[in-house]
Length: 288
Image (tube, rainbow, N blue to C red; front, side):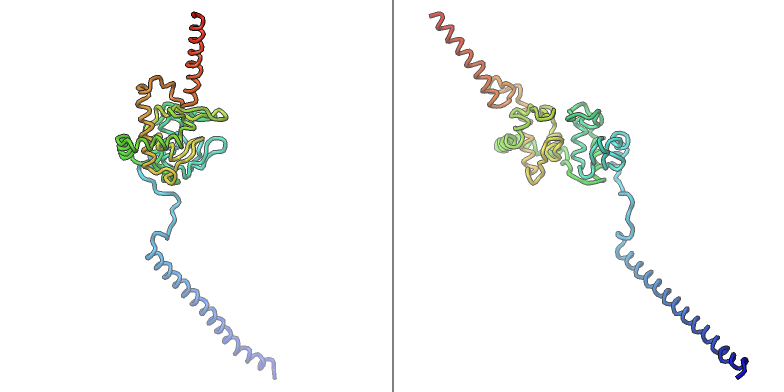
């Protein structure tokens, strides 16, 4: 067989091989097109039936009140609490999860913004109005959630109702003596704690101040959630505190000695009363 004759079968095989390669490539392309089409159809159907899951937002949509609060936050709070309220080391804690209740308490009592780091933030003249504090609280609430205060009208109504019922008022007094008097004293005058800290007086506290303190537990105060003290219990305690504050100057028992409780009162009775009796006895004995 000549060399020319041996090339003829190879020449006949090459076109078939090319056709086979093109056919295989075509099948792969068709499979890829079918796969893309199937994925597109499934994705479209999923997006149609689950539109809320299709796209995650980078930032939550804020209400108008929260937008006003964000503007206040960026001018008054961002230095210590960070751009996203995550906190700044050695300056301020995270505000994620504290809720609007903590913000309104701290701002409305003037404890925040804090002028300088101390053992304890003291009550002072507020730097923001109650409306601005509510806006700031709304921003923190929408940013991270947390406990919220009831409306001012409903809370005042509950406290007024508790004050009008002697049994509820007495129940509030019992709850106050069990849960609050050890730090705030029997007369709501406050008292010293350790490390330069203290329990403040409740004389100038509003209903929302007291409710917010119980709900959020600022500084050394424990948190009294609704599972420990129900909203009705909180209203009864507030009613009792405001009853004491209202009657501080008209004590029916005479000299109230600051209403610091039975131990100081007993000490005063001993130092003044017993000493007076001893001197009176000595004077009478000397005259006789």
